[in-house]
Image (cartoon, rainbow, N blue to C red; front, top):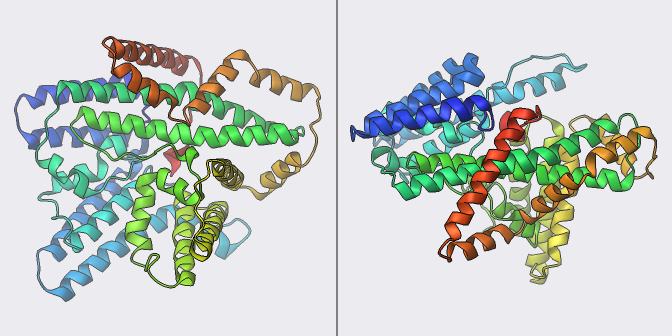
Length: 468
C-alpha cells in the first residue's frame, strides 16, 4: 500500500485517524500505541502479507536481544549479544536482498536463487541497527516494552521508504505525546503538498523519462532528447522521494510524532559533498554516524579518509539495490567526493562560487545514468543515443508530441522551481499577511483535489524507493 493509492487515501488513512482520535479520549498512551501498531500491521500486510511473520520474528528477536545485553553489567555478555544482534540483522538483509545476486555471480549463467524482497526491509533494518548501536553505547535507554519497540520498527508512515527514524528521536513520543489542532492541520497540509508533488509533478516527469527510455529501443533519441530524459529522471527521483518524505512527516505530525527532515534543496549544493548533506539526510547521517566515524572518519591520514569514503559509498550504493550498477554508482560518487576532499585538503580551496551548482548538478545527472540502467545493454543503447544525432521519424515525432505540450512545459517549470527556495519564499511572504494562510490553504487544497483526479484517471503511479 502506497500513500498515493485510493485504498490508502479514502479508506486506510481516514479510518486510522478517526479510530486514533476516538481512542485519544481515553488518555491512555498504551492504547494509542496499540492502535497505531494494529494499523501498521494492516498497512504492511496489505502489500507484503507473506513477509509479516518474518517481520514479527525480527521484532521479537531484536527486542529480546537488546534486553539480554542491556540488562547486564558484564562487558563480555553485553558485547556477545550485541554482536549477535548486529549479525542477525545484517544476515537477514543479506539473505532477502543480496543472496539472489551473489548466487547468480557464484553459479553463473543467470542460475541462482529467486527470493522475493520484503517491502521496506532496507529501511527498517537500518532503524533497528541504529537502535542496537545506540542502546549498546548507552546513548538511549532500551525500549521499555515489546509494543513500543514494535511500533518504533513498523510505524506505518515511515515503514516502507523512510525517513530512517532513530529510536532516540521518538522514544519520548512513545511514552507521551499530544496533538494540537495547529500541529494536526499542519500535518494534513504537509501530506497534501507531498501528495500533489508526487502525482502532479513526479509522475509526469517519470512518464516522460519512461517513454523516452522505452523508445530508445526502437529509434535513436539523439543527444538532446537523451539528456532531457535523464534530467527528467533525476528530477523525478527527487520529487518522488521528497514527496514521500513530506507525506510521511505530515502523517507523523497528525499522530504526534516529529520525524526528521530528509531533504534540504540538494540541487543548490556547490559540491557533491554538500549535496550528500542535503540529499536523503537520514541515510547519509546513518552512514556517517555508524560507519564513517567508527572507521576513523576524517581524523586519520588523508589516504585513510579516502578509503573510508569509498567504503561508505560502496555500501550506500549496494543499499540502494542488489545489482552491480548500484555499486558502480556508489563508487562513482565516492570518486568525486574523494577528489573534492583532496582538493580542499591540499589546496585549501573552497567550493563557494554559485557556478559550482552547475558542476554538482552535472555530476549528479551523469550518475543517474549509472543508477537508472541495471542492464548493461540498455546502458550502451542510451550512451549510443547520447552520442548520435536524432532521427526524426514517425516514432520520434510521436514522442515529441507527447512530451512538448503546454501542460508538460508548465509542469516542468514548476518542477524546476521546486528545486529552489521559490515556493518557500512565497509561503513565508504570504504567512506574514492577514489573509495569507487562507490563500495558502486554498492553493494546497485545490492542488490536492486536482491530484486526486489525476490519480483516479491515470494508471501511471510508481514509487521508485518503494522497492528499496
